[in-house]
Length: 74
Image 1: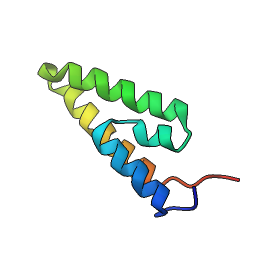
Image 2: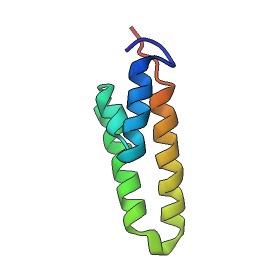
Image 3: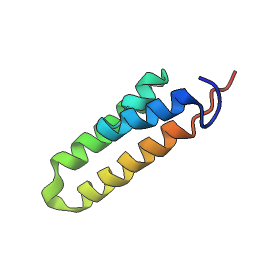
Image 4: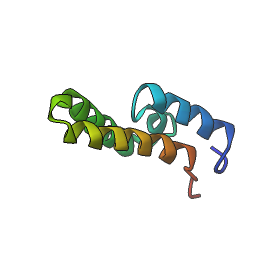
């Protein structure tokens, strides 16, 4: 991937809209992808407790922004 705002980062951010963590997986960051997916999946599964759902929504938005602003360190 190039830098912030590159086409790859835009695609990764769009992937995260549908499945949290998918954008990080597209970028090759497996650990971050698993972390975002698990936090969002557990939080959305426990939606009736309100607080986990709010945490999941924040993590979901964070995953989108994180994928959009990612810069590879080479």
